[in-house]
Amino acid sequence: MAEATEKEDRQTKKRLIELAEKSYKENRFTFSGFLGMAETSLLYGAMAEYGSSAFTLWGGYEDSERQIVRFGDPTELGYEEDFPVVCIRIIPLLKKFADELSHRDFLGALMNLGIERDTLGDILVKEREGYVFVHEKMADFICENLTRVRHTSMRCERCEELAEVLKKEPVDKSIVTASSRADSILAKVYQLSRSQSLLLFQEKKVYVNGRLFENNSGILKEGDVVAVRGHGKFIYRGVQYQNKKGKFCIQIGVYV
Image 1 (cartoon, rainbow, N blue to C red):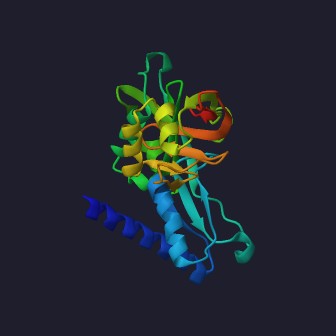
Image 2 (image 1 turned 90 degrees about the vertical axis):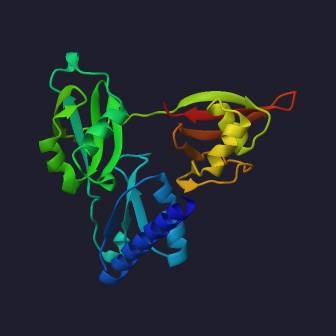
């Protein structure tokens, strides 16, 4: 299993380096498919191996988790090119009779169309509607063929106005921990035992500012964005004070 994962990681890094080389040699922008957190972390390692290469990440909105990487510098190339990202709004035909739908429901319906995962970005769910970011080459196909999510009949449209949908302000929260180490903070944030928290690092599920973070005893910096696969995401705002018992009162902002 570990060997298979390592092989997949090498293939991902090779593919990203090839895109960077193509951009440089052909003097034009090149784009990847949507990358998950693990693949985005591999991107930084790949570029460290390759050497200096300009790239930008974008998933359709600020703080998106799944993103496309664009290789190339607009200043050096002398032109600009938009990311091939489209937002599709998936709307129940009869909203009052629609199922209570989850992220998994919308993802399952999309994957049942037979499309590749790297053509799909983030999926946001609000008031029984879905907003999915997709590669523009798949937008028309999805709009024409996605007609049902679970038992709910749907219609799709391209979405241009995203301001209200994408307001995902973190909720400020204070936690008290015996240690300011990363594993102690994660344990408190997600109500885990220290051993369960440690396992997240061992299973490579913790990312800080988009990069894999394996040092469970590491100290977070103010402003770090911590994403934990299967649990969620929060902003580390720093230690507020240390109480008389020596425990740390820490401020975070949790995305809900």
